[in-house]
Image 1 (cartoon, helix red, strand yellow):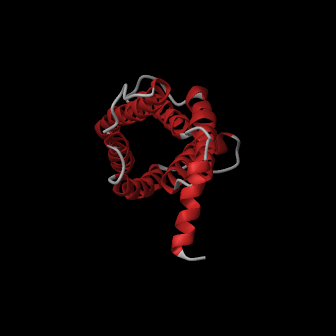
Image 2: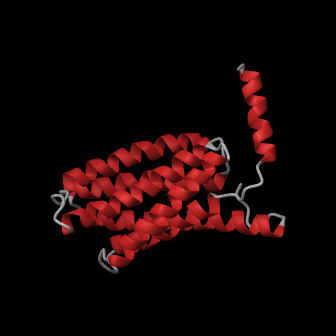
Image 3: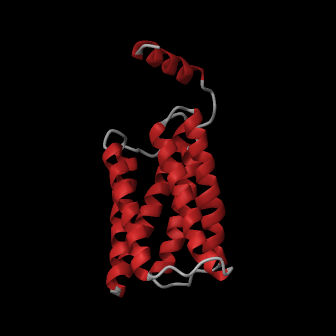
Length: 198
C-alpha cells in the first residue's frame, strides 16, 4: 500500500468515525487525581485509600480506557499520553500497595527520584509534540514536565521546600487539565467556544 493510499484510508476512517471524544475523560481522570495527590504533597493529608483509589480507578483505569478510545480514533498522541499516564497512576498505586501486601520492598527515595525523572523525560517529549497542538494542551504538558522534575529533585535532595513547591505546581497542572477537559465538554455541548483552548 502506498503512502497516499494509506493517508486516504486514514482520512476516510476519520470522516466515518462517529465515536465520542475520549479526551475529556482522560483529562479529567488525570486532572482530578493530580490535584488530590498534590494537595497531599503540600501537606494537607497523607497518602491513604482516597488517593490510592483515585490513582487506581479514575487516574489509572479511566485514562487507559481513554487511551484505547484514542487508538480507535487513530490519535497517536492521545493514545500514548492517556495510556501511559493511566499506567503511571496504576504503577504509583502499586509502589504503595505492593509493600503493604508484603509483595515487594518499599522503594527508597533514590529509586523514586529516578522513577520520577524518567517520567519527566517522557513528558518533555510529549511537551515537544504538543507544540503542534492547542495552547491549553501545551500548558498541561509544560507544567507536568516541571512537576515531575521537582518531585524527583525533592526526593533525591530531601529538601522539603522543593516537595511543597512541586505540590503547588502539581495543583496547577491538575487544574489546567481539568480546564482543558471542561472546555472540550462545554464547547462541544454548546456548539461554540465557551472556554478558549488557544
